[in-house]
Length: 530
Image (cartoon, rainbow, N blue to C red; front, top):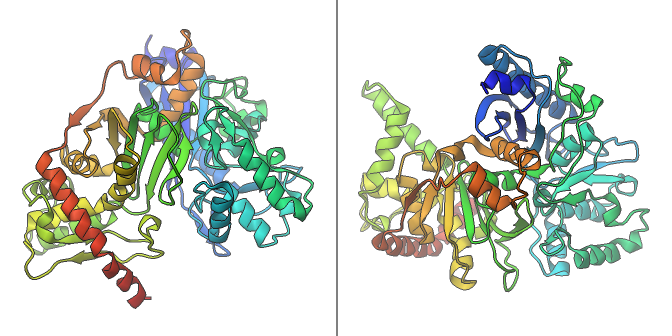
C-alpha cells in the first residue's frame, strides 16, 4: 500500500508526547515507520513559586500539534486523517494533577521540576525504606498534606499529565505501569502499586480523616498491550477541532517519557539499558532483581511491561558544552571566519579524542543548576585546573565531555561496582551522541560497557508511544513487548556499537576521582555567589 492508501484506510497509528518544551506527534505505518510529524512549542510558567502548565495550554498545545500534523499530511499526501488504527499519549512523568468529583483541577498542575517536596520525600523514603524522589506524585501529595492545603480533602482523582489527557479523551482513568511507577512504587510481581507501601501511607494519613484512601484516587495501572479504552466523540473533537477525526479508535495505556524512551531505543528487556544525554541526562538499566538496599541517587521505576528499572537522573549535561562552543563561535566571527555550527561541534568533539585519557588533570563541572546526586542545591559552571595540569584544547574539550556525564558515572558506579549489575547492551540517544563515535567512546569509558546508537533513536518518545499503540493492534502472535521490539520493530538492528578502550576506562576513573575530590570547589562557588 502507498502511504496515502494507509492513511485513507485507517491503518496509520498516532503517537503524541508532551515534552517539557515541545509537544510532538508522530504518525507511523503498520510496519512502524514514521510517515508524518507535527509539533507545538510551549514553556512552563512559574506561578506562585511553582512550575506549571495551565490546562488551557495543555489542550491548545495538543490541538495545535495535531493541526500541524494534519497540515503536513495534507501537504505531503493530499488526504485528511479520518480514522486511525490506534493512538497513544505520553508525557513527562511525575508531578501532581489533582481533581475533584466534577473533574475540575484543584490546584495548577505541579510539574516534575518543582523541588518544594523535600520534607515529604525524606519522610516517605524513611517510611517505605525506599528512595522516593522529590518529583514523584506521592511526594507532591504528602507535601500538600503536610502544608495543610485546603484542596486535599476534596481530591477524587490524582494522575499525571499523560494520564489526564488519556482520561479526558477516552473516559478511562488508567495509567501505563511505567508512568504509574513514578507516582508511587510499583511491585514488579503484581505490576501495580506496592500494597505494603500503600497500606503504610494510608496509616500515616489516617489521623487526617480524609474521605479517601490512596487507591481510591490513583488511576488503575495497566501493562503494555492491555485495552485502555477508545477515543470518545468528545475526545475526538478535543484532539481534532476540525472535526474530521472519528471516535472509536483504540488508545493504548498512557505512558511516561522514560518508558517511551526505553521503547524507542529497544531497551525494555532485562539486562539492557539506555542513556539519554541532552540538556539533562538519565540512564535506565532494566534489572533482573531488586537492589540490595535503597540509594538516594537511584530512582526505581519500571518498563512499560513492568520490569524493574534503576534510573540515575542528572539535571545537567550538555548546556556547558554548548556555552563553550558559543565562545569558539564568537572567536571565529572575530576573525571574520564563516561559522558552520555543525562543523564546529564536529571538530571540537573529535579533537577531544586526542586528549589524555584523564584529561591531563583538568576538570569541568557542568552545573548550570543544582545536582541532587552530588548534593548541590544550586549550580555554578566551573572549569578547574592547576598550574601543572596539561592545559590544551584536546584536554579542555575532553574534560567537558567527561564532565557532562560525570554525575551519571557516579550513580552508575553504584549499580555496576557495588550491586554487581550486569548488562548486555546499552543504547545511547540525545545530542551528546550527534558526532559519530565520540560521545559513545566517552560514555563507554565512563560505564566500562559497550554503547550502541541507532538512527531511529532520534525519533524520540512520540515514536516510542506510537510503537506502544502499534503493540496493542499489530501483535497477532501475542509476543511479549521485548520480543515484539526485537523481532517486529527493530528486526535485528542493534545500531553501531563502540566498545570501551582500556586506557580510556582507566583514565576516566582517574578523572572521576579528581572530580569527586574537587566537589568542595563547586560547593564553595555556590556559597560564595548567592
